[in-house]
Length: 117
Image (cartoon, rainbow, N blue to C red):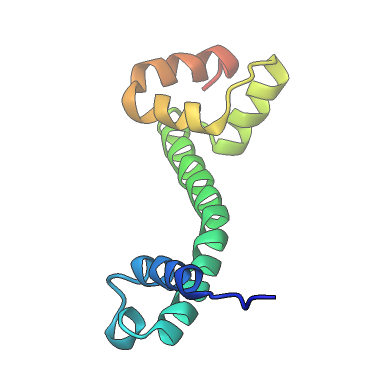
């Protein structure tokens, strides 16, 4: 039986961690033990914040739709309810983009679903 020599494998693993730790402050970018901890923490944040980003964008879209709806004499909730009632299936991302980039088109949409507005 021969012993397992881990030199190449261990170095490859450490290099991967150190490469990912570039730009960290102080020993977080220079010492493997500290870099490994920083990496683990950073990966947790990146996983969590991919979910948070989706929430943040949805909130932004809702704010934009509400602002544009109020300029047209209605509210966000009334507009969304009217869209659902009329069977117009548009997601909030598209509505927000329409409100920002094409105000006249958004106004026409509001007039179509809420004639009194």
